[in-house]
Image (cartoon, helix red, strand yellow):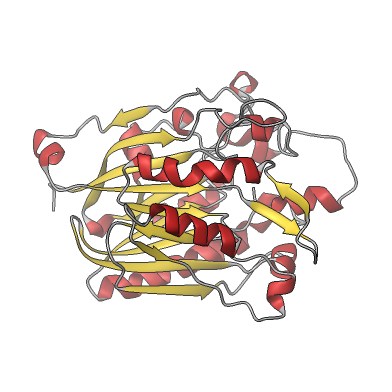
Length: 348
């Protein structure tokens, strides 16, 4: 949820109500509340042919690390959301390397020391990384880093950090809302342009009150990918997009109408319940400010239809509560990861 936590920190407590965002597409089916199934669940594309299974593949992992922390001038932690980052972070490198992914897009990894530690620990498997920071020296004293990062088995041709034209007021004040685009050449899928995003969660505002800002962010990603496609790249837009079929449906439909395919749902054959990436039953969320909301998928991997790339298998990652914490075992983050294996389409 990232900077959305600040909304809860500064607002007076209010009576909790299930908003339209919380209910989403469930349409009142409250028996579904918080019942995303645990465990690392794997799916394979129903119409996958033997030729697709034997073709060149590339696996992409997206993961919101949940490492937001605010410190005072002496480096002391004033708050963190989700909690226990110091206990969870030491496990991150091993879990990412064990995933087997070829390209990993991370959100909510903010602090330079943690980035340096991660890069050092994974360099034998992921020798390439990309990150960017366009904050001024002054802004670094009060604004969070954009939190976006890639690690990769393949070298990057180019990395571009692009600042969003619009942002919710609170996020504009304390954050640096950007998207991180990389291009890769000669991968098993050809030349790729990939945009890693963490779109607005609303700040002071209800998340669905900022659908127009979120669409502006998504439109910028679509436009920069169109430029890359004219240069011969195949485009993917992914990350924590804070929307989906369950909430802010208009933003989700914008991506579909812009020529992109939700490859997670394509592999899952249309049903999203077992690939929810945010679950109130997650121990880190159960003690958080959003624990009345039902499970939903706000993390996505969109592939442009002209790329002729399709998902062949999918796995929901990092679902186990194994980190020892003051509340008992907890998960690696408040989000689960998604690992998607991509293959060339045979219908080119």
